[in-house]
Image (cartoon, rainbow, N blue to C red; front, side, top):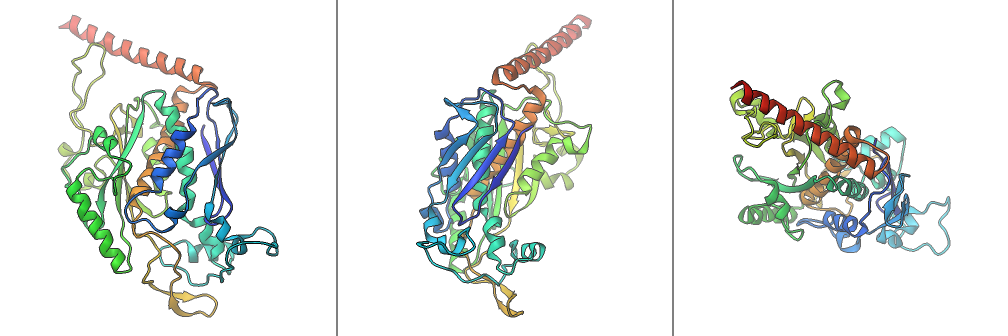
Length: 406
């Protein structure tokens, strides 16, 4: 079982990541990991902090001579902005001599839509900074780092993951436009919004500009596609083992995600069954399992992968920090006041898509290890190959039997 723990504050010294359960012998490409971190920091509509941070992960434990050892992998991502926040975020009871940066006042005006007020009530904080520092989406850099380890494991077995952005505010990719994995994978990392339609992308950018000019923010949606996923991951026998439920939870826990759809998602509620379910047709290949002319189920039936691409869409609300803040209450005086303003983005949907890829990779890797698990990469490869051969023999035998009967 893969497990992930993260620690660290938005303006603290660093983010800490511990990934437990990776098999021994997995080659770790730290450059590929840092590429994923850079992808998270891109996208049109991002705030000023992206010009400050240049995230890079340092491996502290669990890797020797470029390969995992089977022990927990520990990673560190330093916050370059820490130098400007030492007087505000120091760990010691009193400010250390020589602390740099500026001492900022306490935050007492919660932002609607953020964890500010709920967190302050839950933990009894008077200074809301004790909430917002950890509740910040800065934490998602940790998940991208962990997800990179998971996707490197999956890549050993032909599983690849990509994403694209079909919705920004009121600008939406046509409903009948199904984006193939190859299209999503071909999008440049420098693309402003990771939309497959350049003309629509320009309209999306204009919507972001309009929101910025109005002191507002804008949300959207992204789709994550995983191809090469073997059938049989997940289970239908218990509610907490259903893979679609696990994917839903993994994406819903990303900051500002308010809904998740598998395959055609909400469309299943308004279409007839004939336009929802994917027909199952005989394969023309010797030993091949049946094929699907459509993939409306998003590669999952009954909580189990069926061999088709896994497709998951997440819907993101607008960022909670507005430059023209909404009304709030100052908790120090209990009087009406504008909500606090923290440095923030106008739109972060493309960045959230990269985080979504990481979370999908982590969940799929966990399910993959459940199905084909072992303590080393070599052991997992033997289990994987043996299972694949068993499936091929089964369908080859069924085809031969059917041919003989005919």
